[in-house]
Length: 169
Image (cartoon, rainbow, N blue to C red; front, side, top):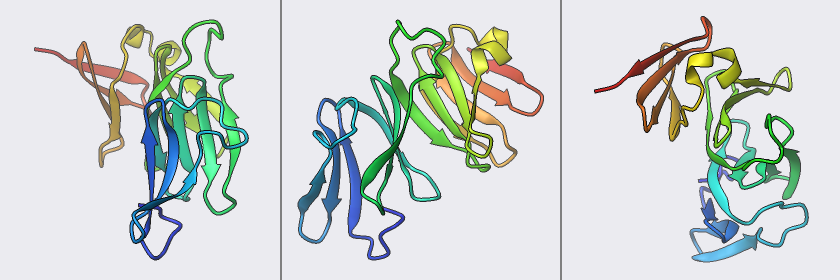
């Protein structure tokens, strides 16, 4: 549901190899089709989230793009945070924490984007024991820990102490 639409009729839907769609619940029709929209870099969207401020964050095969639904236009494209621009740059999951930082799970590691400072943290570098751990999803607990699941088990990051706890069976 679109946080900027007070009627509650607008829903944003992403489709693998299909792009981004603005869905109207009342008319049961697509209002906008962002597959060919000016500025969209990749129609294969893996992850979609609407941040607390209403911006739509899309993770796809060429990084992250941000759509301003009020202006109905793409306003940012983040791709330069990847350590190796020649490797796969897909963003497979996006989450927002309580401080409005955006967390990106990618094939090149876990990153967080500090929106206030406009800077990116590479957690594989910050916590070397995270190297080659690929989070599948990311959530923040009430205590401020960042939890994720991965092929190696359940992980918990303490972003203040820069510590990782892995729980495996």
